[in-house]
Length: 359
Image 1 (tube, rainbow, N blue to C red):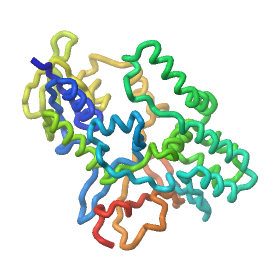
Image 2 (image 1 turned 45 degrees about the vertical axis):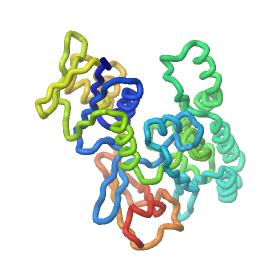
Image 3 (image 1 turned 180 degrees about the horizontal axis):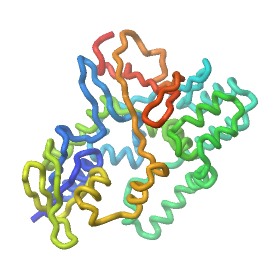
Image 4 (image 1 turned 45 degrees about the horizontal axis):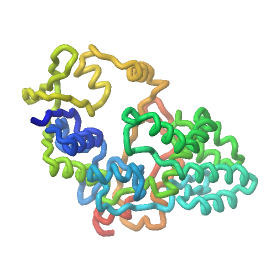
C-alpha cells in the first residue's frame, strides 16, 4: 500500500511538493485554506480587466537550465511562451531616464554616453554581470542528497559566484553606488532593491535577466499556478480548497494527521507544512517546537523586516508601446505606515492582449 502524504498549503511550494509526491508514488492530499490554490501566485478579474498579482520576473525561463527543467516538470512552463522585455527597469531622476537594458553592450553605451567620467566603473559593473552569466542555480539534486564528489563539483561550478559574493556580499547598495559620480546612476543603483539587500543581489538579478534566465511567462501568475494545479490533479493528487487546517494530531513527537475547520480528521504517514512559518510554530504547534533561525527573525523585525507592497491597478485608454515595461518614477513624499515613500514603480501589461478590453 502506498504511503499517505498530507500537505498544508496549496501555494507554489505545496503544489510542487504534491507533484513530486505523486511522481514518486505517494498518495497525496493538499489542504488549501483559500478558494483557489496558488498562494501569492495569483490574479484577479475586474470589469473586463485581469490584474496580475505576483510574477515580476521568474527565474528559470531559459531553455536547458536546471530550474527551467524543474518548472516544466511541475507543469508551470510546459509549452508556455516567454516574454523577454528589453529592459529590466527604467529609472527616472530629475528629468533623466536610465534604462537597465537586457543587452549589456547597449546598457554600457547608454550609461557611458550619460556619464563619460564613470566609464571605468560602468565597464567594471557590466563585466561583473557578464562573469555571473555563467552561473546557474543548481537544481538537479538537493545538497543533502549529494555525495562528496558531487559537492566538490558544485563548489567548483560556483567559483565565479563566490568571487562576486566575496567582493560585494557585505556591501550595501548605497555604499556600492558611491563608486559612480553621476547622480542618476547613483540614485538608480542605491534604490534598485529594497533597503537591506547587498550589492551582490544586484549583480545576480541583472546576470539572470541579461541571459534570458529571468523573464515573464505569458498568461500571468494565476495561469502559471493553475497549470501546476492541473498537473497535480492529472497525476491523481487530491486537493481540498476553502479548507483550513486548525490543529495537528500527534503521537509522541510524530505528527500523524490534521484537523480542519470543517471538523474533518485526516491521517497520514507524512505531514508537510508548506504554509507560513509563524502560523506553523505559533498556532499549529502551539509553541511546543521552536526553530532558532526562525525565532531570531520573528523577534527582530528591524534586522529582518518583512517586505510589503501596495498595488494599484489602472485601466488606461491608449497605447503603452513606447513605455518601458517597468519604470521607477519620482513622486512627492508620501507617508506609508512608518516609512516615507518618494518613488513609485509603474508596470504595464500591453504585451498581454487578454488582460484588458481592446484599446
